[in-house]
Amino acid sequence: MTKEDIKSLLEAGLVGAQTHIEGDDGVHFAARVVFAGFAGLNSVKRHQLVYGALGGHMGQAIHALSIQTYTPEEWQQQQPFATL
Figure 1: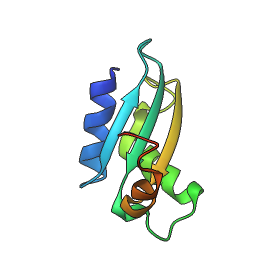
Figure 2: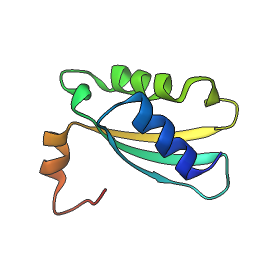
Figure 3: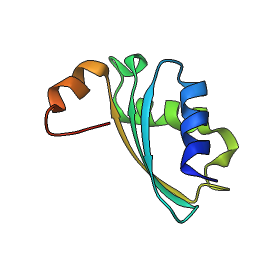
Figure 4: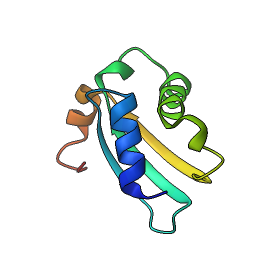
């Protein structure tokens, strides 16, 4: 599994999401996901959406995934301190 694979899975499963994936060892990754569909959801529900987009890859090809989730408005508030 590559960073690009994870990016593709997330952006296909969360249409309209912007993602940034880090991790070069093939099993441990970090994902930053900005998605309007996160509005009104707590962090558990947001993570469930991310896991759903990744399907059966979690726990298999992806051993560990650190997740940061934001709505576009939340992400905008992070500026200029963060980049996607």
